Image 1 (cartoon, one colour):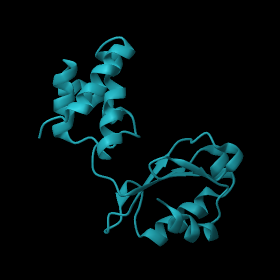
Image 2 (tube, rainbow, N blue to C red; image 1 turned 135 degrees about the vertical axis):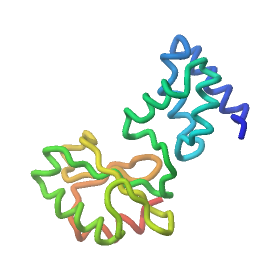
Image 3 (tube, one colour; image 1 turned 180 degrees about the horizontal axis):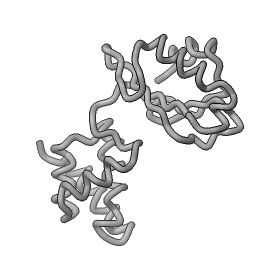
Image 4 (cartoon, rainbow, N blue to C red; image 1 turned 90 degrees about the horizontal axis):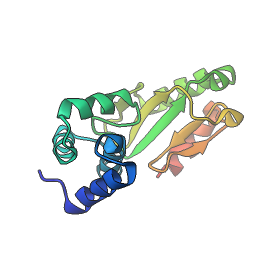
Length: 157
């Protein structure tokens, strides 16, 4: 596996824009994930080499951020907020309904590879609580109720 040149060019541009390799590490991970859906060990090593950092340094950063996926995810990622506003407005019922409907827990992907469910501390959508972010564009949806799930999942990109 070799880093595609357009991706390598984007990473070099990030280094220029961010002022060096270390400041561009997170952006480089984001670029890989945007292009491939997740950051594989092979890609992580290639990016580390391009940046001139160790794979361990880059992996430490990648695993610190919960929105950098270090294993394959489903076609549609559902981020369920478990912040205070969402919790106070019924997020537990929404969580239970999503898990029951998809048959998976947090951090898991459906057997058909269609959905991955992830909990997050806050989506910043407190005025839409309980809220979720859905799909590659992380479209904010809410307020949610268990009965809203069927149309939400069917419309997911």
